[in-house]
Length: 432
Image (cartoon, rainbow, N blue to C red; front, side, top):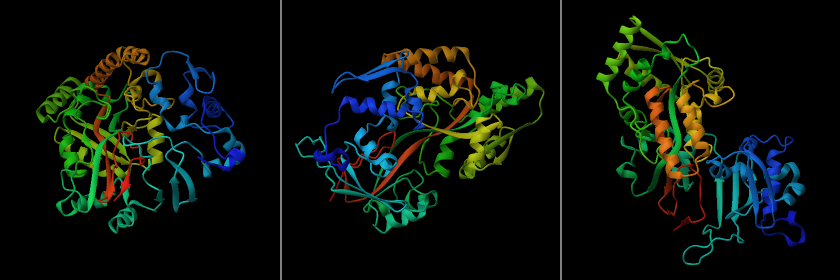
């Protein structure tokens, strides 16, 4: 879109040299971008001409195209960086359907229609339909919902838990009295909520697989989601990979009290232990979930002691292997199942990687190296399924639920959709 940064022409067409500049900037140690890691597997890159950008990888990496879709890889013009310098963040320039107009920090962000945007709809009408977007920053979710209820906001993404019973029934649908005034859009979100077992301590009772399996079978995830979350989320009965990425559903842990009791009793007989006590750490936001788990596991003779920590302390202790059992979640960095399976690769042990459980399995590692190089989608999906099944068999985690996107809009908002990475795409949205 037009900007003073481009001089007298005020704009220009994006080209391959913009990609080259943006990638070099991402790698620049002076910038210290938190997303520099996305190019770790890139050997070299260069603009061949205006329209061809060449990337050579150090080794085959099937998920690389997914990584390129991350915001870290967004393309920016060199002229804008040179003109605005460290103020570019408040003067962004791009090629999207909307352009930056105004930003009052912590108050409001205003975007206007980009009249130079290239896309058209099926009837030949120029996109986007909306003339402008106003994004309001509010201090908390409660204030947001009150503004929405008063029709001062057209759209909200998610809902404060204190309002879920007011708006939704126990099945996660809008209550009858709101059906004529509010639209609800929902769908899978690439986030798996789980409990991790730390397996790095060889003396821990959690080294016993029967104990871990018994705990998994002893939790009624469907009841948990229905009564604690109004079904805002899907019970994790199908492996660790979330629903938005599962091509073939893996058989996971269905609630089975009899099987859970059998496994726990076998564990007690084999180890000669009369009682089982485990400390489960979480932050206060999930207290209801961990208390539910505590009550469920008491039925099978497992005593859970709850340890509530501030979120920052929980993250640090989890990374350093200080917690016996811990609540955690994994939101996809990029839309590929490999991202989730990397949590159990033995070379990714925390604190240097995302393997917080310190799970190690030679066969799993072999499969993980295969999926990185496998280019066939169908073959890769079969490997994903095999690896996800292995996680269920070995039970280094308790998959709790797969998250759900909940978007609420006023009835006059048309064309709003969801996607598994919860990106907000408004180019085909309009108001009646």
